[in-house]
Length: 170
Picture (cartoon, rainbow, N blue to C red):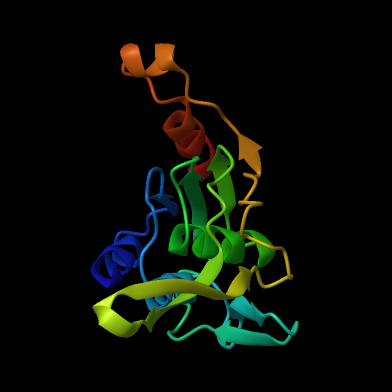
């Protein structure tokens, strides 16, 4: 992404479209790094809230070299976890427009506990919140601009979500 960011700067592109549709997520560090290209230095990307209600903020990690570029983030029901962290950070910091459909709502922090006999148990220990404190888990991220993708669109190889993103980026 760093190379794409530099190309956008060098070629003076008006903005970027990041397509996170059907992206089930990834690593927290990746969401933080990607958000850091757009969100001000030291800005909160996501908060972790434990069972006691204590919140731990995770802040940007890189220089925001794209903070003045237009940004559209495409999401849908298959966008989850790290994808939602990124989309939520962009929304809360007003650094771009989220377009598409409501995301999946996978905003839990889990850990593996080893059990006797070699099996493991996945335990939820906290939940992710957007910078402004919105719960991601079971709530998802509502797009700023809702554009549905129908079966008919897919059959006709149309992409109204991408069309809307291209319209907004101009």
